[in-house]
Image 1 (cartoon, rainbow, N blue to C red):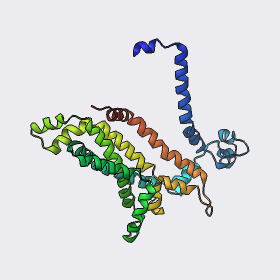
Image 2 (cartoon, rainbow, N blue to C red):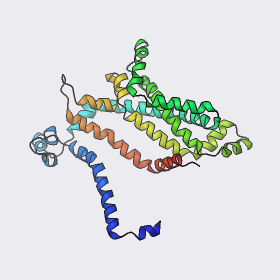
Image 3 (cartoon, helix red, strand yellow):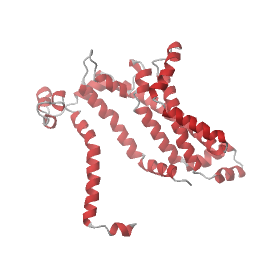
Image 4 (cartoon, rainbow, N blue to C red):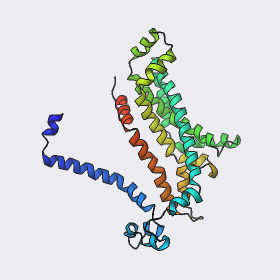
Length: 293
């Protein structure tokens, strides 16, 4: 492989790095532009007269006395209590990830080691359930939640999102378990371990990258969800994504777009940090899941 790299012509290297740089700019520009605009006033960032106002902050300097301002963040986090939506999101995300991984790990291991035909049919049934639109599943929960006075509370949304996410975790973790030889289980049990001890002390450490990868996707599902949280949670228990949408207002209620811009940056930044922190585990997990061991 190294010989092939060394034989590349300088022109080919320039083209490759040029394409990579172009992709990075195209992918990162929307976030960087939004980040810059979050420190402006609406008259600059959404200026119709001259788009360069978003660069130089003409209206921002007139209204605030500086080319940059934190009014959007103060209005979103303090005035509109976006911190409460962030707290609700943290509770929902952590609960969904922990429950989904716990059930998915146990279920995926059981299905991978069962050797029965019903395991295949259960996975197909889970796949059909996962393929259904979220709004279809949510509508089925509404009547009992209203009758039992459960609508509007965080546990309600957690239950539904776990139900939606569980088929995905079962499929992902089942594929990872299939890549681990059964000899590891049998060797551990020969040495005196029970089935659960072999699972906990031998199998799980081996497939830890798969658990991290599946947990990250479960995190993204719960973190970015709009349908479930907007439908099942009251305004007092809103998570970040529906809260951002509420900043935009409606035809009857005037919103504040800059609150939404600041909130978008606040909600997106943790995702960049998370991906950078777990990038090695994600790559190794996806590789382990794609290659039959």
